[in-house]
Length: 365
Image (cartoon, rainbow, N blue to C red):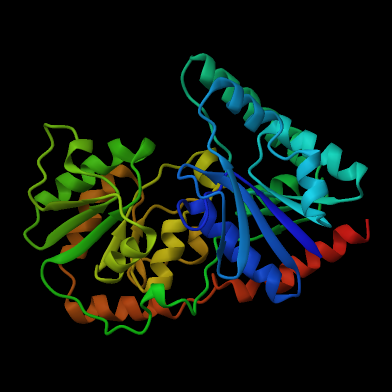
């Protein structure tokens, strides 16, 4: 089939969404389908190729008018006539735009599959928050049930829609043969033990503070924060054993991960974390980096405390967990890294049969 993948991803690798859709497309290509992308861009590169896939990008919306167009008519009849797809995959589409897409596709006998990776819970009482709440409710309760099939990132999402549409679970995927994962490097560990936090803070800033405070109390821990500077940390927080890299290209961030001993992040249990699946975890396992985190989403299937990482049961548990980590020998850390490298569950080649099963099911409907 000719598949058009559309949504708010920024090719070739400028956000986590781009990483996901590219790996999914590799799985689709492996079973004979031709995939093309239409995403968005901040940078003005409106056309290009990545790993053999062509992509086009629409300007990132900046005005009220362009935002309304993005939310209501991201994909147009002209787009469908130009690309002539047999199937459209819509990545986390806003509710109105998704309903419009389904309508114009079905008029042309084009199948629509949703790729859903999130269930946001907007906070605040502003007009923006109110509109987001309306969009999320409409998208999750109605819009995603109008498509022909769904690709859900977690068991939570798949279970929610299982009785409404054909659905498969596809965690974040990677290409395990890509050299950017540094899987053939010599595994090392030393003193101090090198922790890394990678990504933007968002709602996790407050939860990062106890991690920094615990690191500062240890003489055998050092934390590198990738994606931020010390100006992003409250001025009253000491960063004695902490260094910052600022924003980095994805490949450079992966290099830092490969040179570290543990990746650490903490997420509270709520509908957002149950519905999603942390890309950070997949990247860590692939690069051979043990993870210190909480058991949100489906991580209990993969994370084994003391074997390939450590489980944080609550924010109050962070100092105790890091105290355990600080006492590890280099030999134990290297053994944990080997266990991470043995997990191949996230390679896109593992999911080709699931995609083929979904496509066959919706073609028979």
